[in-house]
Structure formats: C-alpha cells, structure tokens
Image (tube, rainbow, N blue to C red):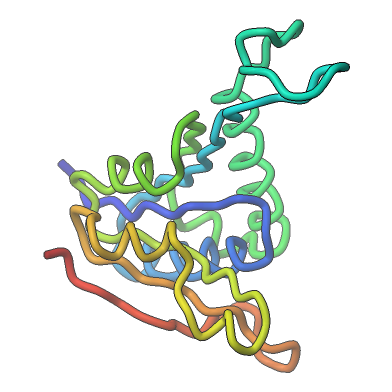
Length: 168
C-alpha cells in the first residue's frame, strides 16, 4: 500500500490552511492525499410545530454527496490558488456522513498522517484544542498534525503547525 496523508476539510479558512499544509507535506514525501469532509446528520429537524426526529423529513438529503461537494470545492479552491503544488499531488475526494471525530479516526487507518485545521474561537478559546481535534489526536491510527491559523501578515502558503502528536 502506498503512503497516504488524510486531511479533514469543512469549508473554513482553518481547513484551507490544513489542506495547504497537507499538500506541501504530500508533495515533499511523494505520496497521495485523501481530502475528507464529514457531515453529521442532525438529531432533530425543525418542522412547522417545533422539533421532530429526522425521520419526518419530507425531502431526502444525500449527506455523503453534500460532504463530497464540500471537499471538492476545497480542492478546487486550493488548485486555483496553488496550481503548481496541486499538480504535484494526487488528491482523492471523500464525503462521509457521521460524527466528524469518529469518521476522521476511521479514515486515519493505514494513513501516514492525519491533518486538521485548528478552529480558534478568540484569545482564550484558541489556546484550547477543539473536541474533534482532541479526539483525533487521542484516537487516530497515525500521527496527527493540527495546523494553527496564520495571522494576516503571514505567508498563507506556509501555515504554522500547532501540534504533532504520534499515535498511541
């Protein structure tokens, strides 16, 4: 099996930085990438009279297809911004429905590295790792790199790495 770097994306700027880091690392190692978006199905949906379980939804939502489109959009935006780097790396696009931490840990099986963006929520909150990142760092089947957001003055093609945790 050839080496693989898995990167989780969700359409955020932090995920775009993680994708750029993962692509740079994949090009350096000469390995392929899997770009993954996970969409969590809602526990409840709104209906005219309040909340109800999703089984009463009148339209069917193809969650994996929607997730795949988010991942495809992230790859397309990255390719437009970094065509030379994107051309050096084979990228597979995957969309999954489920809990993000659980599905990303599953996607890490057989991977050389799992890369995620850090979702800072202000000065205090940005010092803490989010629940998905923490769960992946604790349970992934490979090393995990959390890419911290860059400040406006930094080079956007060189994201700062916040933490790299070997698999336990």
